[in-house]
Length: 446
Ligand code: SPM
Image 1 (cartoon, protein in one colour):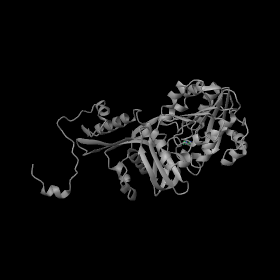
Image 2 (cartoon, rainbow, N blue to C red):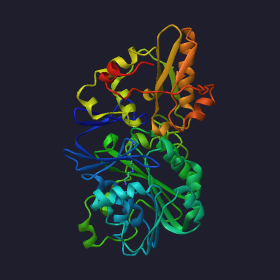
Image 3 (cartoon, helix red, strand yellow):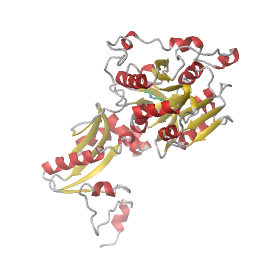
Image 4 (cartoon, rainbow, N blue to C red):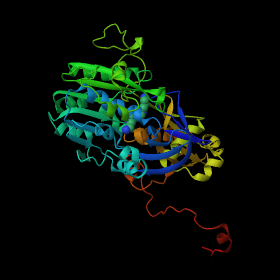
């Protein structure tokens, strides 16, 4: 989730509880809800354009080279002769741009599920999108897991440029996906996946390491510095069916080195040197890192409860996510402070302390109540959280002896409410006032 306050975008997420990265922005250039995610592109004050998916920063023009060069060149230079490469995700094109620098690569299969991200990169991020039109690239618009399942023993290198393991990205951090990746590699193949942050998600990194160690004869973890990711760094989980990955297997030409800003043979090797706390586990074959920090999305348990107060910034973030935030609210956000206090019952869903959903009920305090403002962050939908919010509100209202509870179901949600005992009010029509006060003065009598 994000909040925008006084021109600063703050990236708030249960995956890094209690901290947020803030970037000063100049304008929202593009905003669209695709079939898969919310896509926003901002112009920032000092980091160029910034691509945000489901409220999480994916890249900024100023530092994207660090992530894309390392995610690509570490596995590709570790392979002695990569000819067929698969890129899973990476709709912005940054990884393709880097893979295309390798002349030995003859075919680049690219599996991206969301055409809307590709479109944004084409329109607004030309320095990223330049790999799209390389004649070696074949685009497959489908689910990454399914594509990998369907292509056995096909690739020398697979690069998984995924978002974080919250919502749809979660499956890409789990054992079945890694089994499928292994089966999709040719003999001696190497896979590199987005490996999160060893400082913030120690347990997640631990899971990835354990999974890859179980499956592959060679496994290693590397990282690069990226100021616009939380903690300022991001890991790469590498696994190989043969080649050692910690050293380049082939030299880099002077010409190619000159085109790069982060990767070099020296940093390739240095990036595998990890802080001592990551390597001093008592049983390094199973669990090299201390078991603390955040898991890979799974294991998070969402708590739903009735609250008497809530952080206005978090409510703002939910309103934004729901598309309810209006431009005029920016100048006066004071109504957020009274939103909870003005509700008869206010239910909130929390993931590790961060509000990820809410619903509230207004009532005359005697007999009638109306439920409204039900919203769950996109990544948390279809997990039964909405149902738990409604249950909490109904318990709260019935305790207050309110027995007539109504709501207006938005299109497509009738079944959701019907499944919880709500019934359409036959013969009644919901109305909303769209006239002007003067009209009432001159209106006809009933
Ligand atoms: N091609 C750019 C896509 C970026 N993919 C990785 C994004 C990770 C964002 N979150 C980082 C959280 C670190 N803990």
